[in-house]
Length: 94
Image 1 (cartoon, rainbow, N blue to C red):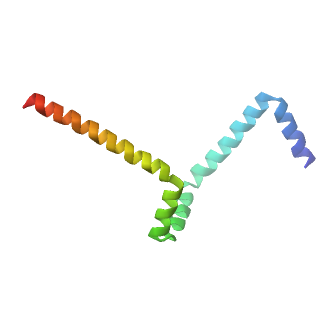
Image 2: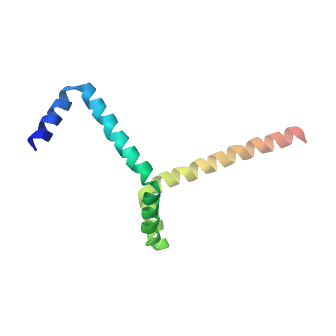
Image 3: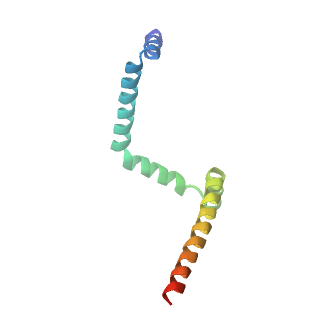
């Protein structure tokens, strides 16, 4: 533990060392994710397949419900505006 504490104290005072450590950790994480991409996908698929439809829907709405509502609102607004433009073009052409 003293070795780790000294290293952390050193990083707090040295921005260049902190940036280098950050790049190294990010590189290692990215390398691990790239090597195990298919395993991670399979693990997620297995866990999602264990859930029934109602539980999955409830989980998604709980975690992303607010975002889903904004997607619906934006879709309605965009659909309205596209419809107005299309009808305007039709009126000009016909």
